[in-house]
Amino acid sequence: MLGGLAAATGLGPRTGFAATATHAVAMHGEPAWPAGFMAPTYVNPEAPKGGQLTQGVLGAFDSLNPFIVKGLPAANIRGYVIESLLARGYDEPFTLYGLLAEKVVTDERRSFVTFTINEKARFSDGRKVTAEDVVFSFNLLRDHGRPLFGIYYNKVAKVEARNERTVHFDLTGADDRELPLILGLMPVLAKHAVDPGKFEETSFEPLLGSGPYRITAVRPGDSVTFTRNEDYWGRDLGINRGLWNFDTIKFDYYRDGNTHFEAFKRGDCDLRLETDPGRWQTAYDFPAIRTGKAVKEGLPYGLPKGMDGLVFNTRRALFKDIRVREALLHLFDFEWINHTYFFDLYKRTASYFDGCDLSAHGVPANAREKELLAPFADEVRADIMAGQWAPPVSDGSGRDRKLLRRALDLFAEAGYALKGQTLVNTTTGVPFAFEIVCTTRDQERLGLAYSASLKRVGIEALVRTIDATQFERRRIAFDFDMMQYRWDQSLSPGNEQLFYWGSDAADQNGSRNYMGVKSKAVDAMIAAMLAATERDDFVAATRALDRVLLSGFYVVPLYFPPVQWVARWTRIAHPSQTSLFGYLPETWWRSGA
Image (tube, rainbow, N blue to C red; front, side, top):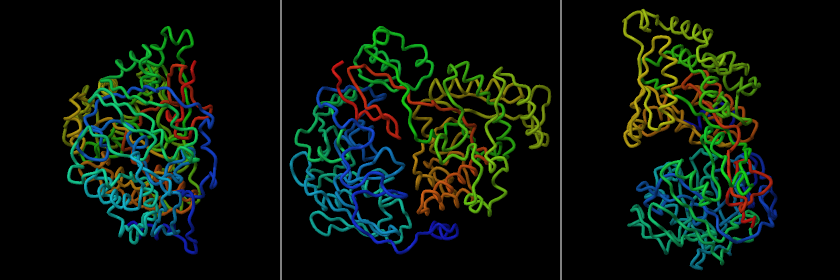
C-alpha cells in the first residue's frame, strides 16, 4: 500500500545511485561530519576524565534487560553498556555514524544494507564483536524482544553473515527508506553470553555489552552503578571523543518528583531536569543556589516540542462532529491557566511538530504541499493552509465572553443549545456530558480547571482519577471520552507516524492513535514522508500532515516549556554548546568546583 501511495505522490526513489561504503548514513541529504572527523560539535574534546556522576530517576526497576516486554528495566543500559552498529549524531535530524560498524553500504532504493564491523570492536570480556553476533541479535530481538523489534525486523527478507566482519540485510519488498537506519541502531548482544531460552525473563544479571561502561553494582529498585571499562575498544572513535567522561555513573531511583528534588537540594544528585514550572519558579531558592554551588539553567533544544493535548476519542458519538471539537477548544483558557498555575512559563502548542521547520504553524503552504494536498482539499481549512490559524487567545480572565459566544455558535451549528443551565442536543434532549480520565495530580488539576470552564456553557465534564494500571488498561483499549496524552516527535519522523495517526492503527488496541483518526489524507501524507528522498520533500510532506491533523481538531492543544529547565551542582560542568537534541549528560564532566 505504501509503495502505491509513494508512487502516487511522485516521491518514489530515484535510480542511478552508486552504492559505496561510507562512514555514515543520513535519512535525507548528506552527513554533516566527514570521514575522520575529530569530535562531535556539542562536546568538549578536552574534557577531563574521572569522578562520579549521580543522577536521579523517577520510578523503580525490576530488570536489567531493556529489550523485553516483561518487567521495568533500569535506565540507560542501552548506549552505556549495549552498543549498536551505528550511533546518532545529535546535531542532525537523523544521521548515524560508524560505531561497531566502521562502514555502511546501501543503495538509493535502500533495498539492502551492508555493515562492516570495526576490527577493533570487542565485548567487555575481550571477545571480538562479529557478524554472527549481529545476526544472532537480529533473530533474538525479532522473535523474543519487544513487539516493535518484530514490526521492523520482519520487513527484512534475509540477513546473512558474509564473513567474520560483514553482515548483509536484504530489504527487498520492504519499501521502507528508514529501515537501514533502524537496523543501524539495533542493539548488538554477545551470542556467547546470552541464553535465548531465558532471554524473555526478567533478571538482575547484567547483559554483556561492548559499550563504555559495565554494570558493577545493583540495589534492586533503588540504584544501579555503571563503571567505566578501562579497556573500552571505542574510546578513540570520533563519535565518542568528549563523551563518557566519568569513571562511575550512578542512577538513584525516587518514587516522586518531590523526593528527587529534596535529594538534589542535599547534593545527593548532581543534576536535575525540572518539569514543574511552579517548582522551577519558587522552590530553587536554597543555600547552594544562593552561594553559587548550584545553578539553574535554561538550555535550548531544537527538537519538535511534541503534541501535548486533551484527546478527543472520536469513536464516541459525542465527539464525531468536528464543530463540537472546535467549540471545546475555544473553552480552554490557556492564558488564565498558564498565569494561575504555571507562572506564565509555558508556551501554547499550535502544531504537532512545534518549534522546528516541520511545523505548519505560521507558515503558508508551499507549492509542494499544495500539490500533495490537492486531492484532499476538503480536509484542510483555508486558514491552516495559509498559515494563519492559531489556538484561540483569551483575555486571561478565565471568563472570556467572546470565546464563550464563539463556542456556543459552533455548538448551535452542531445541533446543541442551552436549555436553562444545561447544554442539550436539540433533537434528543440529551445533555452534553462526558468524562475526563486522569491518573496524576497534575492531570487532575488541569481537568478540574477545564471542567469549570465547560460548566459555564452547561457542559458536565466529570473528572475521574484512577490508578496507573487501570488508566493504562483503559487507554490501550480506547475506553475513555477524553484524556491527556503527549506524542513526542523527532526531527525525522517516520514509521511511527502510522502507529500514531494511521487509519489501520485506529482499530488496533495498544496503538497510539488514541483519537481514532481515519483519514485518507493523513495516510497519504505519511506515505509521502516515508517515500521522500530529499529533505525539502520530506519537510513539505510533514507540514502537510500537520495541516491535516490540525484541521481535524482531534485534541485541545496544551503547552510546552520553551527550554529545558536544568539545575546542577557546579562540581559538574557541561560543554558550551547544547546539541540539537538538548542537553546530554554523557558529554558532561567533573569540574572540581
